[in-house]
Every structure is written in structure tokens, then in C-alpha cells.
Amino acid sequence: MAKKERLDVIINDMNRNPHHWRLDQFRAMHRNGMKIWIGNGFFGYHVEQPNYYEPTLREKWQLHKALRRLRAYIADYIANKQTPPKPPTTS
Image 1 (cartoon, helix red, strand yellow):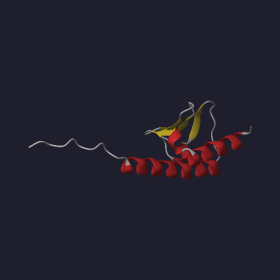
Image 2 (cartoon, rainbow, N blue to C red):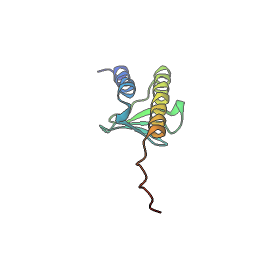
Image 3 (cartoon, rainbow, N blue to C red):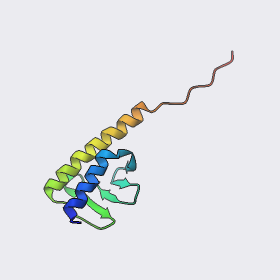
Image 4 (cartoon, rainbow, N blue to C red):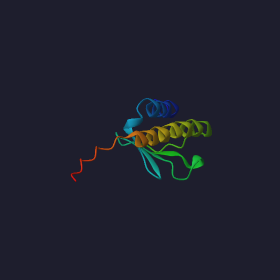
């Protein structure tokens, strides 16, 4: 499988299964162990694991758009997460 096709698979998975991904300040991590470095911003994006890969500028733009959608999904999930009900108070 060519590197371009692999990045397309990654972006497609971000769009279809955002719950499989975790984000921190520096990396996007998939549950299967794939890590994408996002810490240096748009021009610093690269795949760290399983094999190092430096995407082209166009691929970085596609990855950037997918990461924005992933961040929006995570923010929406956190905002709508239900909190457990409070126990009744006895007065």
C-alpha cells in the first residue's frame, strides 16, 4: 500500500471512528498504536508510528481538516456528557 493511500485510510478513520482517537497537546493517537505528531502546528505534522512518514503539503491540509473535525467531536462529546445525578439532600 502506498504512503498516500495509508494517509487516506488514516483520515477516513478519523472521520468515521473519531471515538478510536485520543488527542493531547502534541500527538493524535489511535487505539492501535499509531501516533501522529501535531505539536509544531500545520507544517510540523508527521506520522511517528508505526513508520515515520512526512506528508506532502496537500496531505497535511487534508490531515489538518480531519483534526479540526476530530477536535470538534471531542469538544462536543465533553460538552454533552451527562453528569451523574446528585443524591437527594435530607433536611
